[in-house]
Image (spheres, one colour):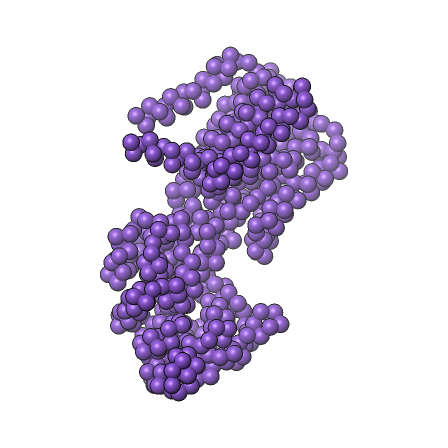
Length: 318
Length: 242
C-alpha cells in the first residue's frame, strides 16, 4: 500500500511536465514553486531542527545565482560545477557569519535580524562590485539544449534538475531527522544549556545545520539564474528568507513534511492569485495571501503539518 | 577529614560573580570519592553560582577547581563533562520532545562503544526500573518524580566521577521527595560520588557524609551531616525549630 502510494506520487512528479502539456510557462511556475520549496526544506536544518530563526535565505540564494552565472558567462564553466562552487561560496559566507554568531550566543530576534542584514549587505556589495555584477543584468549565453553546460530553452530541463535537488534535500533532511545529528539539534533547540551540560558541542552542530542549509539554498540560486538566463543583485532578496520562515512556521515549526506541503499549496495559491488578480487590482493578491496566512496561524497555531497529522490519526482510529 | 582518602574534587579559594556583582567570596570545598557531600544554604547564598563555576558555565575571578589534580578552572563545559563531572541542573532541563531513550542517549554522548552504552542503560534501569517502562514516551509526558529520575539517569549514564544534583526535590510531592532520596541513598551505597544541593535541609543532611553551609557567598560551617543537623544555628535558621 505504502509502496504504491509513493510510486504513484513519484510517477506524478515525473510526468508533471507532460500533464502540464509541456507548456513552458506553467512548467516555469511549477519549477519556481519547487525551488522555493527546496529552500523551505533546507531551512528545516537551521530552523526546524536547530531552532534558529534564519531569514538569510536570500543571501545564499543570490550568492549561488551570481557565482553560477558569473562562471557560466565569463569562464564558460558548466553550470553543474557552478552549482557546487556557488554552494561552497555560500558555505564560506555562512561560516564567516555563523561562527561568531554562535560563538557569542546570538539567538532569537537578534540572530534573525543579523541573518536578514546579511542579505542587504551582500546585495549592496554586488551592486557596487561592477566587475562581477553591478546594476545591470548579466545574461548567460543562450543554448538551445546543452545539458553539460546546464542551459536549455525548454523549462522542463530545469524542472527535472529542481526535482532532483528536492529529492536529495528530502533524503538528507530525513536522514538528519532520524540520526544523531537530528537528536543533537533538537536538544539544542529545546534546551541549549542542558545540551551543553551533557557535553554537546552546540556551536559545532549549529554550524553544521547552517552550512547544509546555505549550500542547498545556494544551489537553488544557481538553478534559478540558469533558468531565467541572467543574474542581478536583486536576487539578494530579503523576501525569500521571510517567505521561507513564514511558510515553515505556518506549516508547523520543526515538523518534517508540514512545511514543504504548505509551501507547495501556499505558493500555488499565491501564483494563482497573482496571475488572476495582479493585473486588475494591484496588490490585492498579496492582501489575500496575507489573509490566508493570518487565518492559518490564528486557527492552527501549531501549524498545518501537526494539524493534518492529528486528523490522520483520528481517521485511522475509527 | 581523613588524610588518606583519595581526593576527588577540590575547590580552592574561589571568588566569582556576574560582572561587577561579586557573589562568591573565597569559597573552598572538597568532594571526596564515594562520599555524599551536601551543600545547603538559603536562597541567594550563591549555591547555584558555585555549581556554575564548577561546571564551567561561569569563570571565577580567582581561585581554582581541580579534579584529581587536573585544573578545570578555565576549561569549557563540554571538556569538564568529558573529564567526569556530570550535573543534574535545577528544574531538570530534560529535552521535552525527545523520548526517555533519546534523553538517555544524549547523556551518553561521550560513550562511543555500543556495548558500553547498553551496559550503562542496564545499570540505569536497575536503579530506576520505571524508566524502562517509559522508554519510548516523550519526556514531557513524565510525572515530576519520573522526570527527576530521568534527569539523574541522564547525568549518571556517562559514568561520571562526580554527580552534582541541584535541587533534586524541587517541585515534587513529599512522597516523591522521599522516593528520590531513597534513590540517592542507593546511588551512594553503590559507590557514586555525589554533591547535592537541596532545600530539604534535614533530609539531605541526614544522608550526607559531609556538608557545607553557605551564606552570603561564603562557607560559614562544615561538618558531618548529622552533626551539623544538631547545631542550634542550623535548627533555628533552616528548620525553624528550637
